[in-house]
Each structure stands twice: as structure tokens, then as C-alpha cells.
Length: 288
Image (tube, rainbow, N blue to C red):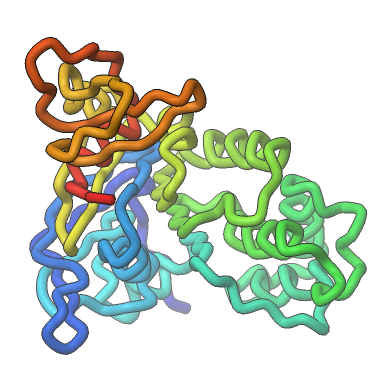
């Protein structure tokens, strides 16, 4: 009998991680350490976030660099199996079997994750489906469920067994405000005993959930720190005016009909308090 390799639930190391698609460096020489808790990953479309998450989920192998996930090396087949036993992964576009019920699909995933005791496995499947609010529809065909309910089926599968590592790509897609609040509670619980890496476009989610935030663009990590530190990047660089400033990095109209500008304020500008969105836009360098 093969003895299971001991894991270190709050230990992830990334060194020089690189992934190429032709001439495109989707992930470009990234190094970071994750030591438990909830980490938010922000970035524009095409930043490389999904590619990074797929490597953290052992779906993709890097072209260069190294990974230590839960203290183990995913390039080792034996270690990779042990990592996957303790990993929950929600891809950006989950591929669900429409003829299955949520109960059948999550049970199938549990079998793949080697939950071999039938009674305990079925109890765990019901537990995670109940936790994501699907107890009342667990026997309906997935094809009959709303997009938000289907997203929660995939989330339930990721939560099986209280994994030490949760890798979630846009988990709040299709969820209504109440469901988003429920998701926050689930993620906070997962972060209490392991590591949760959450990719999102929603800075508000990061502000209330994540003690640590990464901003990624062009395949690189451009910021690594707290939400407060990201907001502070824009301190003194936000002002309002009656018209958009053509020299601003970004300008947009507010609900009051004035223009909020981000960049280098002109002399005499009416400055206003920076937000997390301002800091993110400044770091990511987006124009629009």
C-alpha cells in the first residue's frame, strides 16, 4: 500500500513561473509565496490570470520555473496525486454534464477524488450542495437549472472535503447579491484552515474579503499587498471637474454628472478620495 505524502496546508511557493503560447508569454517569470488565507487576483482580460490559476490547479504544467503546492512538487506524479486529493478547483467556464443532477455530478467528482466509503461520500455530497444553497434542486437535471445554480453546482464540487487549497476563477459569475454574500462566508471558512486563491474582476469583493491582493497584467504581478495599500497608490491622483481631462489616465462621468479623473491633477484641481478601483486602474495602466 502506498503511504500518503504529508502536506503543508498553508504553504505554496512559485519561483520563476513561465507559460508561453507561441510567442505570447501568458505568465512571465512570476515568483511569490502564499502562506494561507484568502488572496484576491485582479487584472484585465488577457492578463494571464486564468493561465496562472490553471498551473496552481495542476491542470497545466509550466514551461519554466517551479511550483510547491501544499509543500509538494506537482511535477512528481505521486505528489501531484496527493495535491489533487487536497485541491478544489473552479474553472472560469465549468464543463458540467447537463443530463446529470447536481447530486450525481458532485458524487461523480467525489469518486474521482477517491472518496471511497459510499455512506460518508454521499453525506459529504449533500453537505456541500446544501452549503451552496442547492438542497432543494439537487435531484433536478443540471440543464434545467439557472446559470447561477449551475455555477453553484461547480462550486459545490470544488468544496468537497474542505480542501486545503481552493483555486477559484470568477466564482461569483451569475450569482445574485444574496448568493454573493453566501459565497463570501464559504470562502472565509475555507481560508481559515487553508489557502484560497480567487480571481475576479470585482474589486468590491476583494476589498471586503481579501487581506492580500495581487494585480496582474501582461503576464506579470505588478502589485502584491493589502487592499488599503492598493488604494493608497492613487492618493492625490484623483480629481473631479465639469469636463473630462484629456491628459488623465482615465476619466468617467459620476452619478452627479461631474467627471472623475485619474492621473496627474492640474494646478487648482478639486481632488477627491481615492478608491480601490482607482488604485487598480493606476497599477494596471489601463486606458479607456
